[in-house]
Amino acid sequence: MKTEYDLIVIGGGPAGLAAATAAYDQGLRDILIVERDRFLGGILNQCIHTGFGLQEFREELTGPEYAQRFVDKTLEDGIPFLLDTMVLAVRPDRTIVAISPKLGRLELHAKAIVLSMGCRERTRAAIMVPGTRPAGVMTAGTAQRYMNVEGYLPGHNVVILGSGDVGLIMARRFTLEGARVNAVLEIMPYSTGLTRNIVQCLDDYGIPLLLNHTVTSVHGGKRVTGVSIAQVDDYRRPVPGTEREIACDTLITSVGLVPENELSKTAGVQLDPITGGAVVNQRLQTSVPGVFACGNVLQVHDLVDNVSEESQRAGRSAALYVQDKLPQTLRSIRVVPASGIRYVVPQCVDVTEQTETIKLFMRPSDVFKGASVELRTDSREEPLAKFRRSRLTPGEMVVLTVQGTVFAAVEADILVGVKVL
Amino acid sequence: MSTEVCEITCIVCPTGCKVRVVREGSKVIEVSGNTCKRGETYASQEAVAPQRTLTTSVKVTGGDFALVSVKSATLVPKARLFDLMKAVQKLRVAAPIRIRDIVVHDVLGLGIDLVATRTVRKTGE
Image (cartoon, rainbow over all chains, first blue to last red; front, top):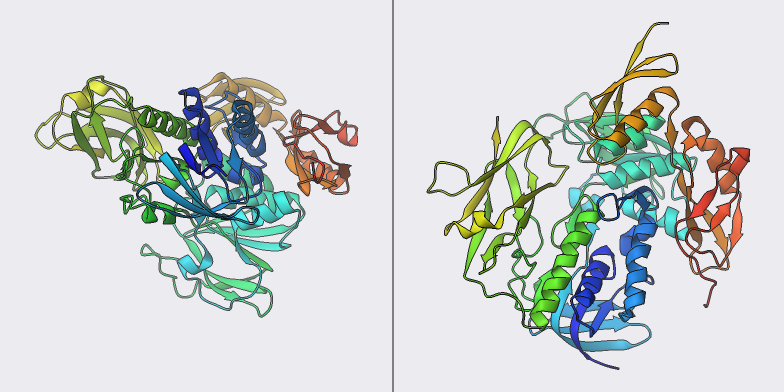
């Protein structure tokens, strides 16, 4: 088997397929996609609801339909891919060790690598929910795979902990399949899910959303028999006297996503402690030459459309890197989160001879109404740029399109912060 | 006839605009708060007769996937969603199925088709 490639893309989900096909469009032909599941398209295969593609394709698609467009493009381009193949390590010299039932142990090498492994759900263990350890406690994504890919209904009487989008979507899915969803509990005073999902997944079916609530204990021997829930105070501690039990056979957790960066670590890529993903520039280059990162492995997105856009940039950059066509960097400017902003990606912008428009992705640390997001430097009184937003919330990523001239004009770090008007 | 005001959160896109609809019986008089044309269409309909796209899956025999994901080709009256689900749960379809194929014609005589949103190949193909 061939072992040398111009570009290897790790992960054949939405990010990997967008990166690979964009690299192809940039003129690269020697590409390989490595996917650990038995199909391309990644998590979109189990996201059978609509809501995908409004930005990328100007129409509303289901997850499988969205995936199919990129799968079709991959097949049309004739880009080879390995399924059922798990990458075990990426070395800093861009050697990849992978394993597959068909091919055994593989050692591949590439001139450039795109890391597009996606993210993983936090589990009950990650948030340390006390109680017994019966069957029937699972993440929303696991339940979604059971129901939408494998064809099993994993419970009949459900409580959902966490109001992220997957949890909300699963509340509706369980309900439609005839299960009872007692409540969705959210420890924060606001939901991190999109408003439209609260409306069409909970309100439509009369499912209560209990804000400032959490599960204090799981009950049951072999199978879940119920959960204790309680209200929490401002410090997210259970309030004595508010505890009550809900009988159920299933506890679904939807308590956040974590970028899956084990391979980035073996590659020696510098990670951002806040995003959990790589530190990158606007070309999605990591700290390791020739290694690029995009999609949910870089930062957890709300919309796959943003994943595709980001990953296409990564794919193009990787192709340009192989072709030795990336513009020369004159200087690097760090983009630093300031008050009200939790993180910004990219973490640095490389200034070159050409000025280019830069997209900054970020999450606010709190809910703000009637605010503006401002770019500043320490040395100047006036902001370099400001963007008004009627509402900011941690659940919704903020995307700012910044003129390249802003970066060309400064030498020092740029601070990105929220100013309430 | 008296007018009634409905506060509707638009679900057309992730923005989630709060739309205010004034109606007189089943006649929409005024729509405000929306930021696009689609929001106006959605809210006007929602105030009078709510509709949703149904997405679910149908069991497949002899395919490389156990299920084929489907969506209603047109909007379904919200009150009929569970009737449709019950009808769909009993169904079995044989592979192969191609994306955009009509999996079920005219469910429950409502004039609504269910369309495949993924391709399922025959086992071993």
